[in-house]
Length: 176
Image 1 (spheres, rainbow, N blue to C red):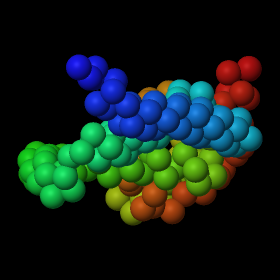
Image 2 (cartoon, rainbow, N blue to C red):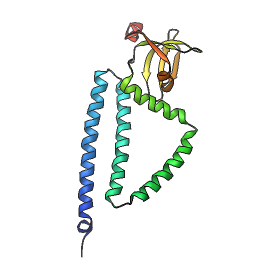
Image 3 (tube, one colour):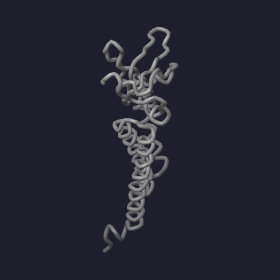
């Protein structure tokens, strides 16, 4: 009588290798992202947010590969994913701006030239702002106006508007 290990030994070995690869690749990517964050003086909360995004994306890819290892047919995977994406797509269509803000937050992590503490001017025709960046979150920036009011500004608008650096590290001087 064959045991489960005898029947599925190749699949078990492939699964172990896949998950070891996932752990190692995830560790390397986290180190790279933290290095970028440290070199760019990016807030640790933003770095942790981006590492979570990368981990979840990598885990979804690993689960897809694991399904193939376990013998699921590609047409079955395609059917499941197309059904899930159709439902999710319809559900998320109403909140597309949230997705664009998250995507903008990821883009800003890697290429945003300003950091927390910088005083910036946003050149918006209807509502121009001059404020200090207090926090850069997944969905929006927290900007402190000169009068002390706090403004939340969506990440996707931040990438669409012209922005000028008024003063680097202005937050330190305001609190002294």
